[in-house]
Amino acid sequence: MTAALAALLGALLVGGVVLVVLGFRPRTDQPALRRRSGTDARRRMLALLRAQGPRLAIGVVAGVGFAALTGMGVMVVVVPIAVVGLPMLLSAPPNRDIDLLESLDRWVRGLAATLPTGRSITDAIRVSVRNAPDLLAPPLALLVARLDERWTAQEALRAMADELDSPDADAVLASLALASERGGTGATATLNALADSIQDRLKAQREIETERAKPRIVVRQVTVITLVVLAVALLFGREFFAPYGTPLGQVILLSLLTLYVAALLVMRRMTLPRRRDRILRSLR
Image (cartoon, rainbow, N blue to C red; front, top):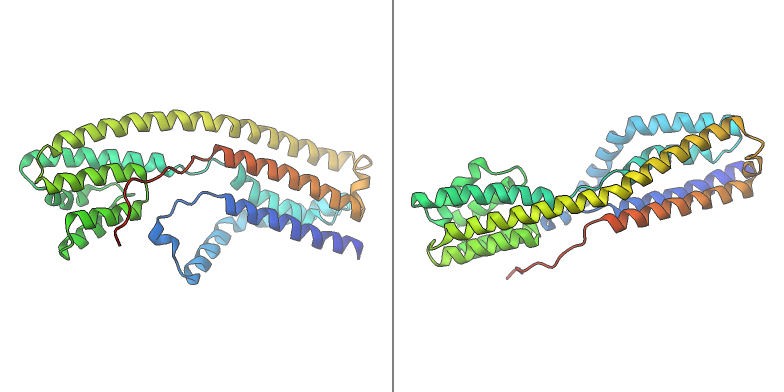
């Protein structure tokens, strides 16, 4: 009974840690996509379960094996959560800023090459949809649809800026909005300057991301070594870990593991890029 109670407490405690981990994961979706219905949320959860299903199954088998060998019932809960959660926690978070900068650079250079042919800003945008980067293809298609519905260029570009929700995109779209008001005068030079500026920022972002990756690599190596040593010690040095086999010992063990996970969360949070203020605001 005491072992079952300890396992239940462990499940609640470690499950809470996993929820905190998921809460700290960076949001890479767009503002319009953040307001999804509960059905979409369930679909994402099911997709996550399908993606992590094999890993979770391996964790359950390993957890049952460790619990049988060590007598620590809490391992049935801890090991599967560690197998699923640690790779997510120690992996490099997606950097949307770099992906978006790369897409903007490609799109802006394509626009700058199209404008000298005599097309207007809106015509050049329509043409650019054909070879748009994957990240920009949906918002660009929506932008063209709004232009076809007789939205003004300024309104359509501001709406696209809200969807991308990025200061870097704001700079490009604001320049296009101003150029459309002037009839394209000087737009090519403006876009070329923007492309050079994007390249400089992209280079800086890549250097920053390289520096951010260094502590993650060190922590990942330390964590892997620690887990291997603990696993071997649990299997071949059971006398040393015998106190952790009691209900109180398992609660203490869970507390120590929770503190370590909390330290990993703080480290991950520190290496995430900070959100910058936008320069365009929605008029709607």
